[in-house]
Length: 325
Image 1 (cartoon, rainbow, N blue to C red):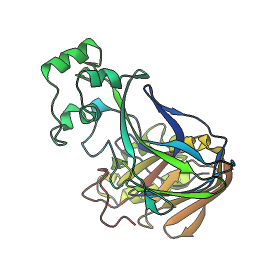
Image 2 (image 1 turned 90 degrees about the vertical axis):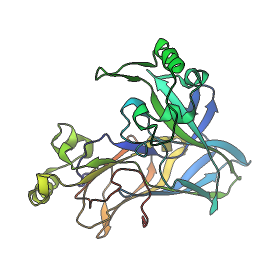
Image 3 (image 1 turned 180 degrees about the vertical axis):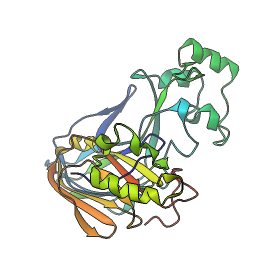
């Protein structure tokens, strides 16, 4: 299915569906479950707010307790754009049957597909020192690495020459939210998430990139509408946001997602939206596009482009807006 959108100057940032996981010394391991079915998911996505409602049913005759993992995007720490752009999104909350649920946060460092968290911890780095690049540690009130730590990490190959020729941290970071959840036998369990996503933000110049049309299924109708807006926009590039969401973890549940609804919500009817997604969207109102799928087993993650977005002071910062709903 093709819809409207427009691109940004920064790489898109992804968030994710819940998945069954196991926490081990090697990191987060996803596995399938034969006991628990995801009966329903309603995913609402705008460029400044994601909210998700799930209904799970434990179809086995016994109560089941599972470790639930909500993975955030992996990002290279050396090219972090700001101390609020990456890390933990603002306003993240979990409610189960209407009650808030506590969770733990696990910071995981990777280099060449290897988990190097233990090596960084052994060198004395805190989670914040692992998660934030040197350029933004001051703003985040995180201590700089000392000379001994830098030397040790250089010897381990964790600090070295980057693609741009500069010397810096070579690892990437994965943040996971983790909690234990009991699923009563034969009962419906309702889970709600809400948070402001981290987004790519900018003037939309990357609509000219070679892979733009393929990534967002942008068609001629989109490009014509975008050109009209660009013609009356200062600088010729409409402001835009790119939001990504990891859907494929939905396949860890029994039979995938039995009843799936995706609502794309524009903050302004004048926004353009484009994305690749199966099914036929219908217009619910001037600001909402909706698609519903049965027994949905996501083959790809979600990448959505919002163009002609109104500018704000906190563009792309991941800071929860005062009136997000």
